[in-house]
Amino acid sequence: MARSTSGESVLTRTMRILGAFSTVSASLSVAEISRHADLPVATAHRLVGELVALGALERAPDKRVRVGYRLWEMASRSSPARDLGRAALPYMEDLQAVVREHTQLGVLEGADVLYLERLSERDAGRNLAEIAGRLPLHATSVGLVLLAHGPPELQERVLSAPLRRHTPYTVTDPERLRRVLAAVRRDGYVIAPRTMTEDAVGVAAPVRDHDDRVVAALSVVVPLRGATAPRAHVPALLAAARGVSRAMGAPVRGGDVVHTRGPTRPAPTGAGAEPGPVTPSRPRTGACAATETSH
Amino acid sequence: MARSTSGESVLTRTMRILGAFSTVSASLSVAEISRHADLPVATAHRLVGELVALGALERAPDKRVRVGYRLWEMASRSSPARDLGRAALPYMEDLQAVVREHTQLGVLEGADVLYLERLSERDAGRNLAEIAGRLPLHATSVGLVLLAHGPPELQERVLSAPLRRHTPYTVTDPERLRRVLAAVRRDGYVIAPRTMTEDAVGVAAPVRDHDDRVVAALSVVVPLRGATAPRAHVPALLAAARGVSRAMGAPVRGGDVVHTRGPTRPAPTGAGAEPGPVTPSRPRTGACAATETSH
Image (cartoon, rainbow over all chains, first blue to last red; front, side, top):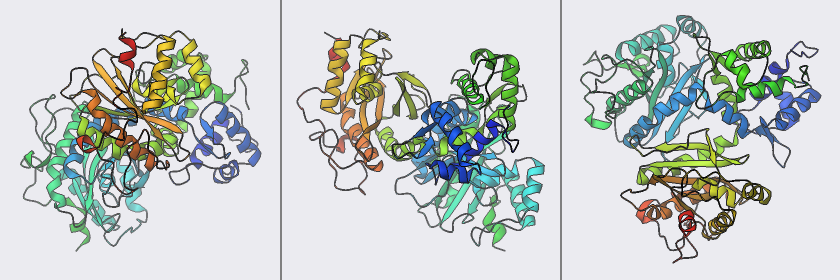
């Protein structure tokens, strides 16, 4: 492997170049790339030139560089994000048709939520989750579900580090957060009011794969003072999460997902879904970050 | 740049490795990668190992390799596919809510259609277009729109090469195809019945950017004998394509797009959209690959 004087391989430096782009700075000059990637301009220039020649990057008429369709295609067509997206989108569309605000799917990546899909009404309320964007685990409903079912070492790492208070309602006390995570595992969903933005409430449930592992979380984000109480979306959300899990090959089970009549039946959405079997612990109010933060 | 004995750079070989994955073979063994990428096993093994270490690839417990979330994230968050997807999805959802079959968005990549987004009913008819998948330009409605507005040298290249007949209705005669492309430019949309699969009809319209260039095509794919005639979807399709174009910063214009009352008004969908100004050439039947192939 070729190494620079700093001992870094070509691929390490290339990943740093790709890492320089973000959802807010989607196109960069070579000078900006060399600064963000902490590489000499000559190195950045040479590597960017080769990546453009290979179609991994594209150079606009204004000389600014961005990721090319070719790299997007190669990264998308065989990524696990594609399997999850394909399995989830039909159920997300059903859910979105009922909720009509925001419906999204996220996975655990490092110590963040990485969002794979998002459907939003054009006039829906504010939502910080972006496709291919990241948000913190402890401050989002998707993140709380992923953290609750994540590796114990990750939970300890997150719980032992200082937790940023995004709003007065973000759960930042480790012990409270521990209780929230336990409730998520027990109830099979979480309601996280105002933990990331003060005007929105997230409701999330786990998505499982053929090994019954939690591989993603499905959520709806609704306004704090919407026409429908956030809790009313729980049955439809759990039914959709169950549908996605089944599409991912997850074994049929009771507990945190609605029992359905077979693999071909579409996941029920809206009031039609029986809340009965949804949460084993009725009449408990379910895992709710707010009830944890408000006392 | 490090070069193998064959003179290929590390990045060239890495792109060949990423190119080995496809929508049908999303996960591969190192042996399969070395075969598909035409690289010595030792080279494939070393590069795959480094790409896994960098998070660009992921190795499953069964040792098979696939693209990792990290590469998907870096490729997705700054790709033009993301801008188009963000601009298109809300309008695609409106369109899909009316059509309830398949709604998709594609761009020109090389001499193919590359599909960026697709929304489908769970019980919708067959559709070969997959997200991050490719289909031929001359046999798809999206491809006919992109080819009609593509670079003249690409048109000549496609028209001078032998064109594959995917069905008896695929336009493969260069002169007929030339007439279809002229009609697409004149009418602002195309109806392509049974050109890719015998049981489906595609209807597509161009999406333009801030420079008024055609950068994508929006389409609906409906069954040959569906409840609604394919032509009846044209006004909603054109309205949605206009909405996406406006969201991409395209200048307001008449001609092939519906005239609306301002940037904030949602694109009309369904029967509500006035077909009047949609096609300048009424009562012509519009660009229709079938009328070209049927005589």
